[in-house]
Image (cartoon, rainbow, N blue to C red; front, top):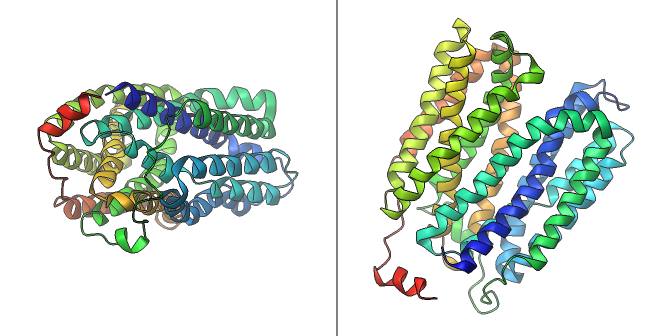
Length: 399
């Protein structure tokens, strides 16, 4: 990476980290803390307060992705972070679950993932882009791991309202990163064709990746409806689940070195296929082992393989989207991608909860296994970007 590429990657990973830490800090304690609010005795309302974020985020991803193609990435990111901070403040001041729902809905409307990812794609060359995306993915996974450890003791001291104020402060810190650390974006938006949804929706090279991110996050959320109960069944109290999650997440990072090497060799197709196949294998193993009450070591190993697959796919897919999409419609393409990601988060939670109620944990694992297998079959033929001419990287390195 050049110095500018490294600075862009670090700053944009920092923006993601600050925003996602604020979001993740709430999640481990939300269900328990929200029960103390007026209206907190209604599980459906609390579930809506949890899920409404994903719905409004899904609605806003494409418009904000299109806007970033038209008016510039940084402007959209700053506005999105301001909206997220406003929603955090509303939730912090909430006196009822209904107001929490409103605050969470406003938070979701600040959907900046597409604009941030598009800006990273604008500022990195194709041959190092997956590495940049992977570093962003590492920052998100690290914040998830940190939140699992930090959220319970923080909630005990400052409560749910305090966590939302902390989320607001982290979002404002993200704005400072955008304005004073992130390199200036390429000055090309005024002179090029503007992205349209028609350019990317059902694009022959993009639809498998869009399907893939929907399946990945549907499986992720549905799987976590089942996994905590399996850990409890294996003898690990809820308060100690991070003892399994944290080592699995951290150990999975070690595999990303192989991803960077594969990118340099032009072997991303193999990485993508390996990630999907590994995701399917984990779901199938859980389906077969769950009735036999697997032990902690078995569950820990399966979670490690899941996080390896998750990290590989989270790094590879947005990089491929940015390289396969028409250059003038990169924000729109990543908007569609992030919309389906958000819909997957919502669908996974809703589907998992309904299937557990209707058919028990086995029904959830059957569904996640079928979805992963479907993705494996349809994604096997994913088109890869054409290799760059050998002179291009040399010229790029000269700057």
